[in-house]
Length: 190
Image (tube, rainbow, N blue to C red; front, side, top):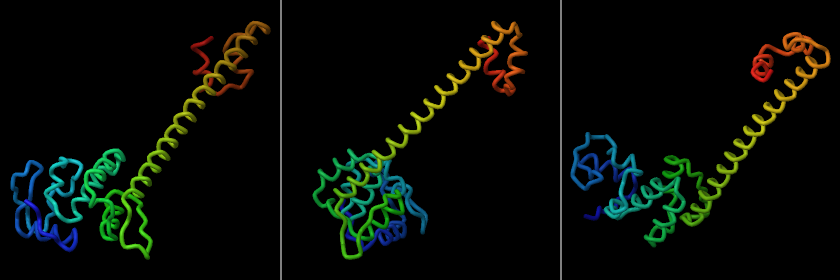
């Protein structure tokens, strides 16, 4: 069943809820309360590929974009499968920016957005996030390595004082002015 062409996403949802019915992901009819947005439409990630074909408006493209917003390959596959999906209007871009923080920019002089450009933006954002995550992980590993080296140096200094001065570990740590946390960190190695 193809849905009639509605003028907006909001209009579509209002008519769908006013009718008291909605399609569940399995295609079975379900009831929804008046004024309530159907859960099915608020969770596009749960929709199956064939469920998107039930829509004949741009709602199909909006829900598809939302479903694959974190999966650039899935979005590219959906784009290749539907030639009508190559451009989105201003309202659709606004919905995507609000729903998935897509950060898609449509210049005032433009009427539609090229979805290929949107995919490029998503890929760029994913690469930036991966680079940031890798940098954080590298910094964390470097900090751990530096701390291990610092404790190793403390232990070597304590052992040298014990050997050369004949002091106990406690006296060497006291003379060195080590904090309680440094003493606890070095103690297992003495």
